Amino acid sequence: MPKILFFRIAFVSWLVFITFSSLFSFSGMVKDSRFNIPYADKVVHFVFYFVLVFLGVLAVKQSIKVKSDTKNTLVYAFLFAFFYGILMEFFQYFFTENRQGDILDVLANTLGAIAGVIVISSYLKKGRSLK
Image (tube, rainbow, N blue to C red; front, side):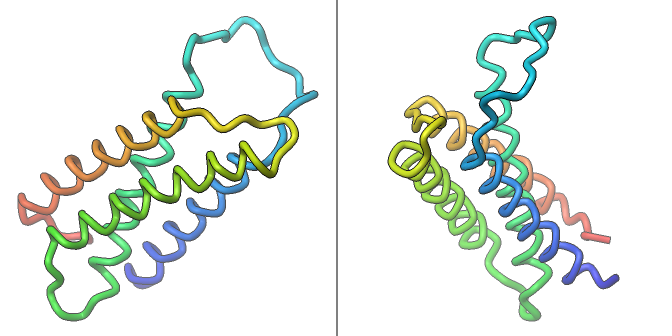
């Protein structure tokens, strides 16, 4: 499978996964109390948006035939993740019954997106190929 198709599918699949995970009600599911880690949901938010930015940048870098400006790609990927995270929290607050929008989730999303920008930026600066 060509890299361009792989990264596009991975990015869109991850976006669908985040959307489903953000809007689906998990109430009534069995919760194992042995693994009650405080603020674990914030770590999950961080990881979700870290991966979103990482895959988004790789998808754009592979999609554009002409060498794209990495700085602009990083900025757009961050802005997309930031506003998408706000949109998901807005939807949770107004359109779901068992989910709540949370400003701390937005903060965790944003920090994950920033970390994703930093990591993918350093990865691309080292001149590594995406093979």
